[in-house]
Length: 128
Image (cartoon, rainbow, N blue to C red):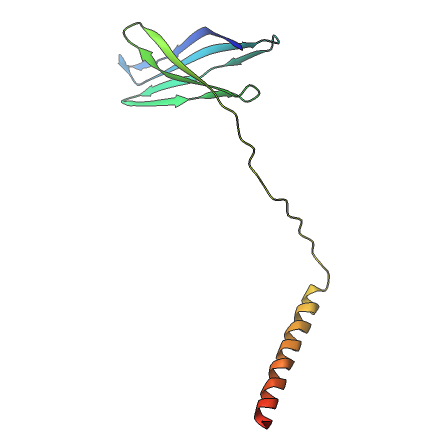
């Protein structure tokens, strides 16, 4: 379905006074489809002190996601995880709001009619 190639491995590891502050590794990946479309992505792996961060990349048109997972120290090769996912359509309801002019007048009339009904019921109860 896809031809995935690791083109480049970029490393940015500046040191201050001979001590490594952080390291940023980027894996340049080229994805070629059956219809000769080419996509380039670069997932990033960041090491800052004792903390590791992953910056995943995604090709939305193909539904592919790439993650620079780790470095395999036995083989000295990067481990890149590729996953394919299909986004489900989220069901939604379309609501159209219409503002009616003079709607407040309608509410005042409804309240007056309810008030009149309450007064009439009270008057009838007094007579009975």
